[in-house]
Image 1 (cartoon, rainbow, N blue to C red):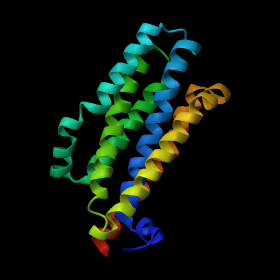
Image 2: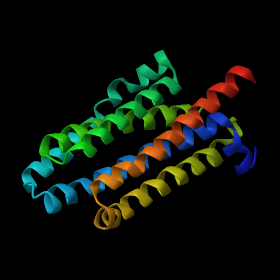
Image 3: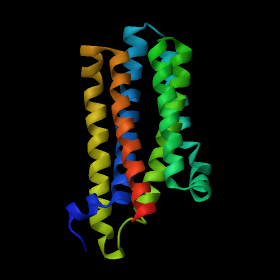
Length: 193
């Protein structure tokens, strides 16, 4: 099989890896910071904070019942674009106000946006490598996804303490723009090469 550099320079493989990774780091960063921001910064009760996290988890996994079907109908790129739009709306809600309802709807959208990016990305991954590269490709993708997720989770509290909730949300925007560029490049490459 091809080496790691050749694999990651392939546009569809890069789209799958970057989409899944950025979806995960965005979700992990915002989800981990949410209970701290809600309860400790904005003095929202622990019961309401728990409810927001529960609804977020529902938003993460309930769409899995139909996301794969949507990918089949509309394609990986379109579902990833929809995930990015949903995450952008989440960031907007989180940014404009820090009350219970903004946290609630923002975190539900965070879960849904993550689901669309992650499911579309991981299902794209399996068609972006040759059969003999399966273990190498899966291992590299898992390293990217787990590594970025860990960075998001471990840095959330520190970033919240140093810069605040709105900064963490703004930090996710360039990451989502990167995903848009990678998807566009992969689609362009597929169409014209």
